[in-house]
Length: 279
Image 1 (tube, rainbow, N blue to C red):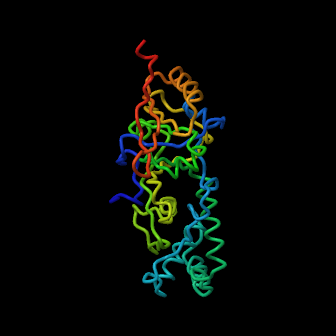
Image 2 (image 1 turned 90 degrees about the vertical axis):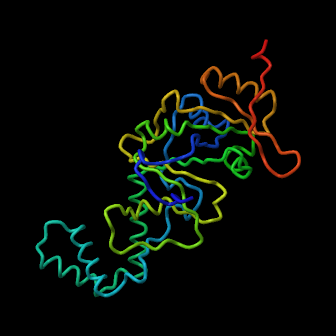
Image 3 (image 1 turned 30 degrees about the vertical axis):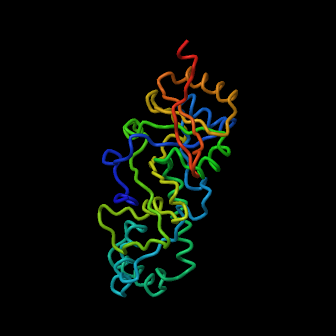
């Protein structure tokens, strides 16, 4: 996980050859994702983890000297009040410094709320995983093992033009502290999108970031989907129906199913054997 938590331009991102998305049959949007290759790219407002992308925006304690705080206040007033003269900037910076806004809980809460709103307005996040055999994810993202898992060609995802940045989620037990003064390659607001509580570590999540310009629904190229994995609790009859639909819509993909391990807790992805192919 050397690159965990690091946001990279999409052309520099290194990911597994296949990335997976757990989905449910019977959900119109989910089925369109499979059969029509249409993806919905949500904002962080639609996530189920209340901390996801809403981690409080806090600076490192060692950076919060009086001199540094004044310099930060001056930089902030210049950013949010363009067109003033130097004396006006200095007066606003002194006022902000006197009010101790960088340590005021009400101001910080307002800042956190505004930061989250900006993130949700500007960026969509497509969440995928490297693991198609995750028992918990099959349970709560794929209709209790009766759904399916889409395997995406990672090269196609990163080259299709929808995503400008991406990275692997960093799981940790404490909120990250951010530097008071940013370097050119620092993206503090986006960094928040790639940090989650360690309780979610089992998801092995990768995120692809889309800058909103023309809606949230887009169609991927034909070759974007390379696998479909069917859940282990699906009836044979229903599985056969879905396999026929998959072959018709996506004749190039490989179809797998999940089987339960016989000698331990766990799941295994295996190729589907279809006797019709050998008649």
